[in-house]
Image: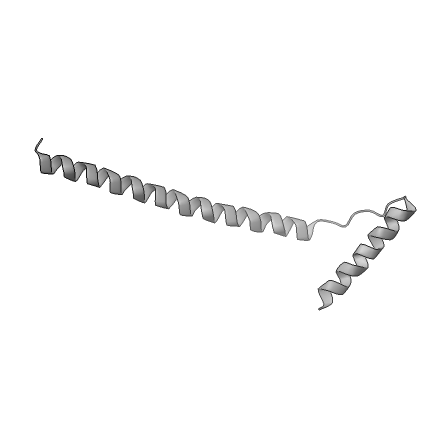
Length: 74
């Protein structure tokens, strides 16, 4: 092979590799964002905890629910 052909081959391989890595990077980034959105949605949609039989813990749970309720109205 002649020198220009070898140089062209090396450059085309480098460009191809770089484009492949670029596509993989953006694909992974999009997947990560979708996963985080799915996890956040699951946290929002989970059912509330059952009331505790422990009196002090139940009091804390009720205070937390009141605080969350006030925070959502604003």
